[in-house]
Amino acid sequence: MTHFSDGMTWLNEPPFWAVEDGELVARSGPRTDFWQGTYYGFHRDDGHFLQRAWTGEFTAEASFTGSYEALYDQAGMMLRADASHWLKCGIEFSDGALQLSVVVTNGHSDWSVQRLGPTTGPVGLRMTRLGDAVFVQFQIEGGVWTAARLAFFPPEPPELRVGLAFCSPERAGFEARFHGFQIGPPKSRAIHGD
Image (tube, rainbow, N blue to C red; front, top):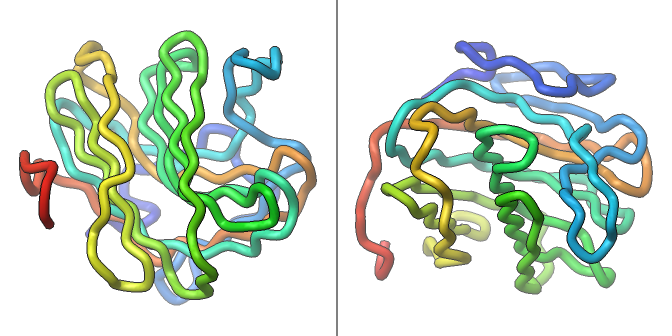
């Protein structure tokens, strides 16, 4: 298990964050986001990202909750090479509901969403990097791990930044609570089953 202070640093430190009873609680700055161009035309790289370096393949897992209220409030995990090459995944508030969201950016951002049922418990995310691919899975309140996306991600550079991300494109003060984060060698190469 990785503690939130073990080798992790902020890209765009939020105005408030604290570790309380082993959990990271943080609140977003105003109108923060990660997005590059597609459809909307803007380029934003000011979301909050608590990150650490990792070389090669891995599986990272996080568990979190959030005070989702405004359009595009979001929390989850991020994998990043630079401002133009990254992947973020998590829960995003859109169309009045919680959506499982994955954005892959290789020069330009894309966006995929999957509507979730109501939940107030923790959401789990698992991100596995294998060669030129990233496999994203999610888990609702301790249920089964479910596939969300298998995406291309360049195998170079071998060292990337991995960690927890959150932002609020339409407001300030979105609160995210991260219950845990861990990273290590890939747990599995299978994309079917747990």
